[in-house]
Image (cartoon, rainbow, N blue to C red; front, side, top):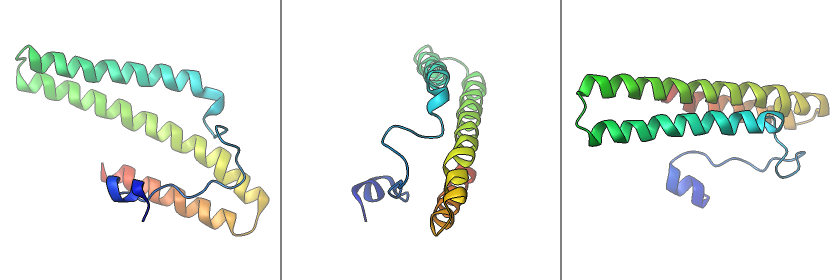
Length: 115
């Protein structure tokens, strides 16, 4: 078990053969993704502010729901890019790589469904 597995309780990502470090399915949209994550980060800071200001519970829960949906939407976009890039590349390459990528994507989908 890797350190990541031990600390997170999730399967650690397997080695990503066939991809250079830093070149992933999302690399063409990296700036847009970072912008989106900064907005989500702002939503989370807003939640902290609401709690600090003793805002009504239901109003905070509404914002939690919006933040959760934003993260889920981001995750789905990232998953789509992974399927289009990494899984598609593995399918073209052939061999056992496709099975590993499909299994990896299936596990990621399972983690998303548990949230």
